[in-house]
Image (cartoon, rainbow, N blue to C red):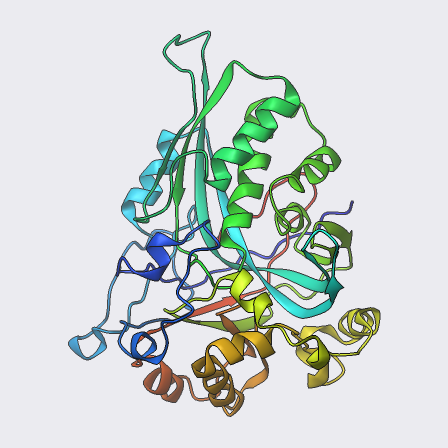
Amino acid sequence: MRFLTPTAVTIAAAIFTTASFADAWILAPAALQTGIRSNIFHQKRYQYQQHQQLDNKHNGVGPSSSNERRTSLVHLSSSTPNNNDENAQLSDEYDLSLFSPCKINLFLRILGKRPDGFHNLASLFQTVAFGDTLHLKLRCSDDDPTVKEDDFECNMKGVPTDKTNLVIRALDLVRDKTGNEDKFFKANLWKQVPAQAGLGGGSGNAAAAMWGANELLGRPATLDQLVEWSGDLGSDITFFLSTGTAYCTGRGEIMTPVPPLQDGTKLCILKPDIGLSTPAVFKALDYAALSQVDPNVLLQRFMDFGAVDAGGGDAYVNDLEQPAFDCLPELRALKEELCEVEGFDHVMMSGSGTSIFCIGEPDDLEGFREEFGEREGLSVFSTEFISRKEGVWFQPPNV
C-alpha cells in the first residue's frame, strides 16, 4: 500500500457547546430521533467556524467583537486540532497523541441488499482536516499489578467510556491479536466531530486507536494486518488506515487505494444539530430510485478530473440522499440553499447524513456567514483535503 505526503494545514473547528445530539450519540449508531423534525432543526444554537491561518504560538479563542458573539473562531495550535489549553496539555501527559480526521464520501452508490442484511456499496472516501485527538499512554501490569484494564476518558458528555466504545474495542482487538494480554492503555479522546453526521468520526477514532496501540507495543502488527483486523470492528474503520483517498466496496470494509486527490482542496461542511441513524436511512431507501451509473465510471472521472471538476456535477452521486431527505425534508431544503451559493462547485450529503459538504469556498464570505453563520441549529466547519505519508499517521494542522 502506498502512503502519500500530507500538506500541513490549518482549519477552524467547532466544539459543540450544548450537550445535545452530539453528546449522547457519539459511537452509538442506533437509538435516534427520526420523529424529531423541524422544531429542533430551527431551535438549536449555531456556531460558524472560519478557516484561518495562525501563528503556532497563538492561543487566543473567541469572537473578535460583541457583534460576533455567535461566531466562534477556534484557533488551532501546532500539535492539536484545536487550541484548547486542556487538549494541548494532554499531549505532554501521554506517550502518543494522534490526530483523528473525519471523512466525506465523494460518491456513494448502493448496489443492493445482502443476505446478511447489510448493503453492498461502492464509494470514494476522502479524509479532511477536521477531526479529533486521541491521546494514548501504555500501562503494563508487570509494572503496576493494579492495572488490569484500559482507562478511557472523553471530553464530550454522553460518550460511552466502557467497552461499547469503539476506541476501547480497538485497543482490545490489537492487544488480543498481538498476544499482549498484560499491556493496557490509558486513553483520552478529545472529541469535536459530531455524531450522526456521515463523517465517520467514531470509525476514525477506532482506526487511530489501532494504529496508536500498535505503535506503543513496538509495531508487532503490519499495516496489512491492522487493515484485515479492522473489519471486525466496523465497515468504515478500514478506510481510515488508508493514505486518505480510497475506493471502498463490500460493506465498506474492502479498500482499494487509489491515487490521491489534491491536498488542500477547500470545502465547507454543514451539520444540522438533528441527526438520523443509519438504520433509519436505509429503512427509507427506495431501491427503484437508486442511481444506475457504474461506480467504476464515477471513480475514473474523479481520478481523471479531480474533485473540483469531476467531469461535471453529476459525478457527485449519493444514493442515500433520497431516504435521508425523505426522513428529514429540512435537509433537502438546506442542500438546495447551498447549491445557490456562488463559489461552491459541488454540494452533496456525506454518507448517511446529516452533514452536507460543499466543495469550494463562498465568493462572499461575509454574506455566507450572515446567511448561515447566524442560523439556529446548524454548525459549519471550514476545512480541506489531507492525506498522509508512508509510515506515519495523519498529521494535525500546522505540522
